[in-house]
Image (tube, rainbow, N blue to C red; front, top):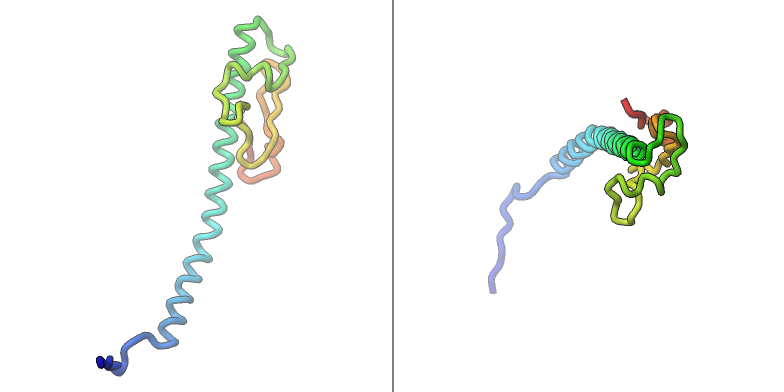
Length: 124
C-alpha cells in the first residue's frame, strides 16, 4: 500500500488566500463600474445609429412619394420598405428599451430616452 508524505510548508496559508481574495475584490470593484458605463455608451451609440437610419429611410420615403418637409409620416409602416428590418420583421428598436417616434418629413426622429439617460440618445 502506498502512502503519501506531506511536506511541511506545502499549501497556502490563510493569510495568503485572504490577500488573493482581497486583490480579486479590488479588481472587481474597479472593473464593474467601467463595464456599466461602457454598456450605456454602447446602447446610446446603437440608438443614435438606429435614429440616423430611420431619418435616412424617412428622407427616401419622402423623395419617392413626393412629400415635402412637414408632411406627416405613418411610422413605422411608411418606412418599413426603406430600412433593413430586424429578425422580428420590424424596424430596429432602441437597445435600452426606448420608443422611437417619427412624426413628419424633415423632423428628426427621437427616442423616448433622449435626455433621461447618460449618455443621451440624441442625434448630433
